[in-house]
Amino acid sequence: MKNRLNSPQEFFGNLHIPDGVYISDYYLKIGERKEQGILAEKKSALWTYRQITQAKKDPGILYYTSKNKLNLRIFPFEKRQLRTTGIEVIHAEPVTLYLNNQKIALFPNEKTLKKIPKIQSNKNDLCRYVSSRQKNILPAVSRKPYFHFIVDYSGQSKMDVKSVQTIIQNIQKKNLIGNFGYKISFVNYKVGTTRSFGFMKNGKINKDLEFEQIPLPKEGGFMLNRAIRYLSYQFYKENNLRKFPVFVILTDEFENSLWEENLSPLKFLFPEVDDFFLYQKGGLYSHPLSSGALVKPALLNKLFFHKTVNLGNDQAIHLARRNEKPDIYCQPGIMEIEPTAKNFTKLEKGFYLDGMNTFKFLNPGKWPRAWHSMLALSFESGILSQVTSYIALENETQKIALQKKQEEVLKSKEYFSLEVDTVSTMSSPTFGILALLAMLMGLLFFRKTQRKKT
Image 1 (tube, rainbow, N blue to C red):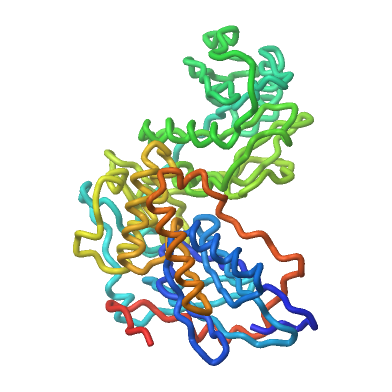
Image 2: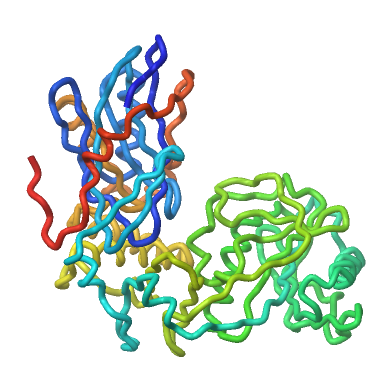
């Protein structure tokens, strides 16, 4: 990596990885020394990186920002300076990574390909890897969509019963999914869902749905992100192989909606669709669940639904798209076990970290336990997770500061109120990659045993 500018810069890179791929090591060349990365608790590492960059020292850091996206930061790059960094990747079949839109193709050896585990029907199999080849021989599952309307019922909202009725009728006239079922949830800082399951036919609303009985008062703010998360969990508990929700937001002030985080971990609940939708100006607009912030919605002409297969069983449904990508299938019971005590391979521990992240996301009430379990498994396996970060430091003073901060965080019961998981971008612009060779040298293929570190 080289800074082509004539002033010091910070390197900032987005690394996109597919499911079933995990980072198991990281290093940064500092001068002539290859400094091995330290796997640390995420908030502690981000705090340390921020403190050091203010003094223009030599840190590098790698951490998740969402399910399949990581940030790589290195500071400083002096003018025209060439620097080398590397990561170790474990994976079970050919994959493609992207670093700042640069494509990196990885191919495991034939021995690894032969060891890809087969699909099992054992309902006690809490977490497993399903390759694209295995997935595409499963029978297709076809569920019927229904609209789940999320109505802004905040103190500032102008939405009322009449406007909701009118919008539903207008959507029906567009015939986007034909005659459809629907639910309605009124949302502010609470969520109130109507008991009846309405049905649209010939442009008329089912009279069984009593709109007048709105289940909560109009007050507070419109917490859209939290509502989708809560309603997704309620749908998950239904274990439904017959139908799935298409969320449609009804609000007159979409920009004022409270959107806190990327919801991509929820995609396995309804892989048929990528987005939620917003009704505006007589049309439906799409908004990605995977966005970490509100973005400008795109006008939708027709709803498209992906073909799916069921990786689970009747007791625990887990749908996935029928495509050329692998999937990780996990059951909720994963939150109740301690993988560190079992005879798992390193790659399997990566699968369990994936599953823990998904189910703690679905059930925030179990987050404290999940946080500790994920941290322990990440430390034990050396695999980067959503709660850890790899950081390379220049000297022992920095390492002591990191250790001290981490001890404070691990002892604290207020780890959720610490600063958010971001690092402010430097005032100088970031720069592109001239040479990927240095990175590629650090990308190693999956092996049964971990390589010895030098």
